[in-house]
Amino acid sequence: MNVQPPVPSGLFPARPHGLSGQALPSRPTFREPHPVRAGSVLVAASLGLAWQVLLTLSATSLRGAFWLNVFGVGVGWAVAGLLLRLGDRGAAAGVAIAGAVGGSFAAILVAARWFSVGWPLW
Image (cartoon, rainbow, N blue to C red; front, side, top):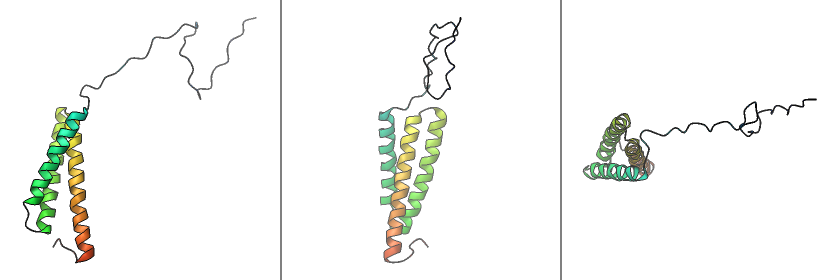
C-alpha cells in the first residue's frame, strides 16, 4: 500500500521539496540596483533643511517667509524627483524629507499666527 502525505492547505509555509521528496533549489536573490544608504539620506536631508532655513531667514515678514518656504519646498521636491530619476534614491528621500519638515514648520508658524492675531497670508 502506497500512502501519500497529505497536501498542505497553504495556511502555513511548508518546507520546500519536490515531488520526489528532494529539496528544491533556493529562490533567486534580487538586489536593488541603487540601494538607499543612510549617509546619503542624512546628507541630503541636512542640505535640504539648510536650504529651507536660508530661504526662511531671507524673508522680512511671516507672509514672505511662508511663500519663500513654499517655493523652497517646490524646488526641493523637483530636485528630489530628478535625483530619483537619476538613481540616487537615498538623496531623493533626504531632500523630500527636508521639504516635508520645512513645509510643516512654515504651516505651524502660519497656524500659530492665525490663532493669535488673524490670517497672515494676504
